[in-house]
Length: 267
Image (cartoon, rainbow, N blue to C red; front, side, top):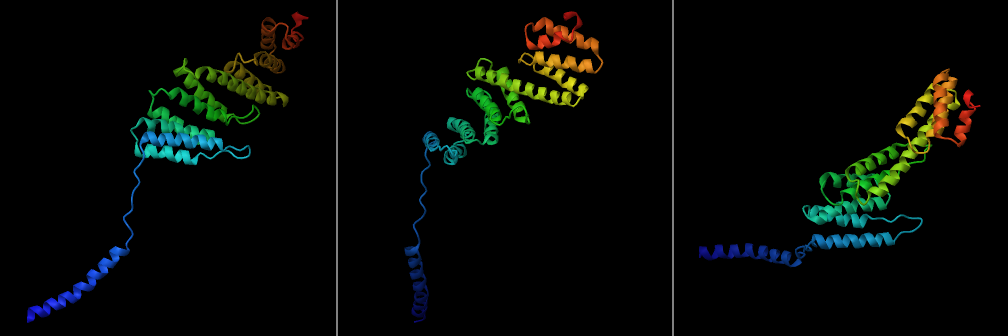
């Protein structure tokens, strides 16, 4: 009799718990289904297609946003870090930032690519693009030239390491343009000191131009102005030597004619 009483008591306690458990199971959402991650190759193709779509969305008043493509390429790096696609994804992210005008971010990724994959076939391209990122930020000769100097340093490294690469010819052309810009900047500083009669400071800048940026079409003018500085600093002998160099090397030019007026024997 006692056993039957215990059985009934247990049955009364268990039945409501079982019912509640069954109800909870019936109302609980199905377990989350995780989508299978696409392969590295598939993700890279998706990123390239998204990049093309975003480029096609360009408007004259609004630069395209490459955020979606960058996210896809980053997924490759996070999930397939040792794949060739992960390596190329780093470069693709750098290109996306470059195209969107975010040059500091682009430089960061290009530099990382070069440092992490120094023997990769795309290293010359990454070095060139790093230089171009600074080139895009460089300013005219009357303004700060920090970005110009950074661009030159990048192109110097590219030309020294890969002089016969596909990018070398274009880099050399831009390298000359940037050096001319720095030469013109130095000339502007020298002219400022010349204008306010600070001839020693002006002469120092003209000498800097001649030593650092020769052969860019600025030599004759810089030499003439340096000679004038020496004349006004009472360094006549040095001035006459400079004017004589101008007469011997720049015959028929306006600068030579101006120098001739300051050389007694030439008149």
